[in-house]
Image (cartoon, rainbow, N blue to C red; front, top):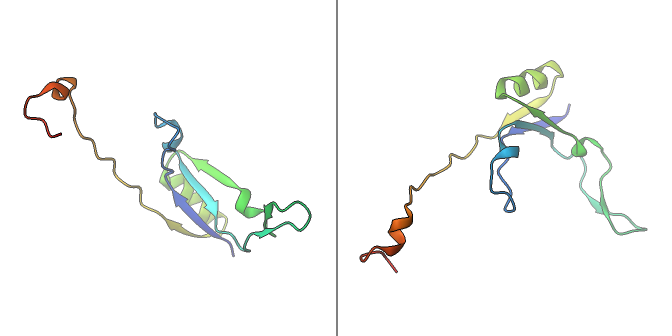
Length: 98
């Protein structure tokens, strides 16, 4: 039986918006470890399930898919964003920390 992980992806360092972080992702845990290919030296694995990523609009859809296909799954809770309100005028305050 395959193990699956359901999570909300974090935004990448090259991304300013949150475009690819709004959908839930279901991916499979690797069944075999990666090893270098003897000819080319690229890393490869024996199973192809670790290449599959399924995206769902809601967490309930992802869980329903896992249950429907008999997958053992774990849900990784998303980190909450912390918003620090800032104002441009704060750059010119006399008592600002340096």
